[in-house]
Amino acid sequence: MQDRWNAFMPYPDVDVGHASTGPLSGLRLAVKDLFDVAGYPTAAGNAAVLAASGIRAATAPLVQALLDAGACFVGKTNTDELAYSLIGGNVHFGMPRNPRDPDLIPGGSSSGSAIAVAAGLADIGLGTDTSGSIRLPAAINGLIGWRPTHGSLDNRALRALAPSFDVPGFMTRSLEPMDAVMSAVGMPAANDRPISILIPADIFETIDGAIADEMIASIRSAVMPIRKIDSISSFSLADLAVAFITILQKEAWESNKTLFEQAPEAIAPDIAARLLSGSRLEDWEVREARAIAKLFSGEIDRLLGENVVVALPTLAMSAPTRDAEPESFAAFRAACIKLLCLSGLSGCTQLAFPITDCAGNISLSLLGARSTDRMLVYVARQIRAE
Image 1 (tube, rainbow, N blue to C red):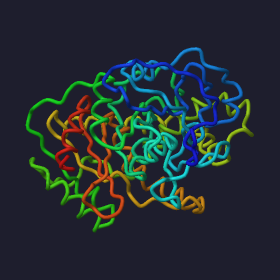
Image 2: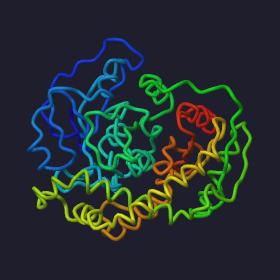
Image 3: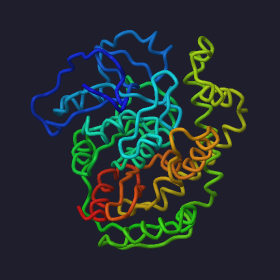
Image 4: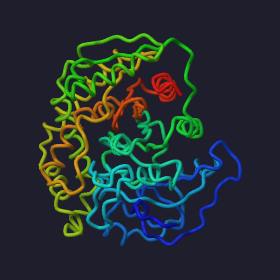
């Protein structure tokens, strides 16, 4: 396969079988190189991990479920190193090129899976989402991005980053294949209860006013009750982001401590710095962060019922260019995590999708209660009038 976008890992092709019929028949599947696939190594975006990997003898159960549903495997995809970034760069394997705007970053860490789908090389992009690694590249590349309810999908034979937040997730170009994927991996059908949409004023006030107005106008086009609320939480977005990052950094260190101790020179300096930050956290800091996460999760549980969703901007600001300075990447990451951390802290499901009738590349998200994943597709269809 010609891959001028650098979406796929440069592995020799191995025949990976799939069912001849099924709900995903005819759909091409690109798999982030964090999941084991029989006949391939698993590198997690790191040369030392690749060298130690060996060829896997078994396929991750989630990948196998997709193959059994008829999806056709087309390759393993590039990822940010150790899946620990939102930018899409990789010092070992390069930065995939954004087919919508080659000057912009692709977004990460599921960069290759996003690019494969956006460039038409795959129909389903399987990735992971810890701090936004599905939703952010989906938004930048004009895709549908689904972060499932935490713990709802099989994550065996998947390399961990921060287990409190890690989830497998998917990207597609439209809602129809996304709904088919949800069904194929066992997500329950949406109920037929009336649905209402909440618009939190404090969150929409953090983004550009013109973009916020376009988003809200699009939401209002859906034929369902809409209610504005001041906030979804008693905590500020900044405090929630700090709690999230504290837990993330601690668990990322624990997941990669052995690699860091054995081959520190094999880890990019910015990734290594974040890992070291996690190693230096005090136990009381982590306990306090987990307490905030628990309280916030309770607040979201009380706010959301099975028939309520929260509308959010997917990103806090426009994506930087791929040649931007590291400070610009850091500012982008910090701003976006304030919004992307909400589903991680709460364990709730989130669906990101482009608003089709808006100028430019505007991505809206829906946050729903646990196990209401397919309901979000229904609401998105109403907003997009599909």
